[in-house]
Image (tube, rainbow, N blue to C red):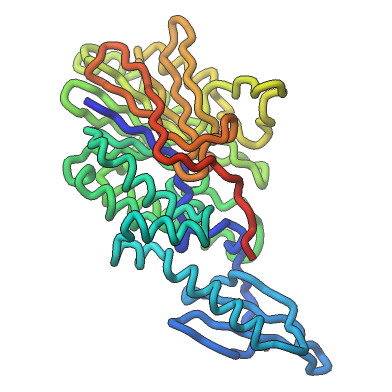
Length: 373
Ligand SMILES: [Fe+2]
Ligand SMILES: [Fe+2]
């Protein structure tokens, strides 16, 4: 029974680098100069009426880029902004659902937009799903900003129908870290979108925030580690005491105790990052699981065999004697920051002690996010 462990897809509405996510509230004084399929190129003038800035706004009202409005060769900049809009539109989740690109089309699209996470997810669909895993797990950060679940719902439909897709939320799916006007409303909308997605794939948690699912005689416990700290700009997490109590109670359940395997899913990393080659370990500030010790202890006491998580975008396996094996997935779209490889873990749960194997799904190296305009 093959399990495919995915994590940190960071899908977005268009799969683009994350810089665009800032919302610009003020609409006044921006004049419409050009539009295409709901995209708008708008300009604003200074007090003396001289051209000041141009911006590209998508159909949802999100500003993708703002440029200085040139006094000469304005058409050239408008054409460049339009080509950005066309590039974005081609990789929107709606478009990629409407028509699945062939492998050749995908390579062409990736050539002009190599870091696009929506396209990289489709690469995975082409290269990894043919392994035909019995179970697919996504350990959070499914989206970068709460948009883009449609691609998962569409391309993993066969697993969803069989209740073989297991998901837990990540900080990117559920936190709104940036302060500013409208933060509360953005957070509520984001939480609602994750909730809607979890319900659609039948992975909505119980009241405690955790869930238990069975696949044959294998028990899967999903924990939410997405409890934001009071500190702003932090992506750290915590598993609530209510969930830990739930896990403790579960460990007394006779069916759970006699399960062939017990697998626990969460987003944040329960062990601190191991060292990188020749360097100190990566900085953990603002990223850690704040009650990691309690979580590991609860998992150990519940006789969890495997803990699967994501969040750090570094892939590693750790088996400390007397504790569950910990499998950290790299980002399935951006790759592994330690090795600069792009791979996913697969594990055969029909074995008593499944040892995860690396499956490299492309020969591309992971590449850091770069700004493309
Ligand atoms: Fe992530
Ligand atoms: Fe994360």
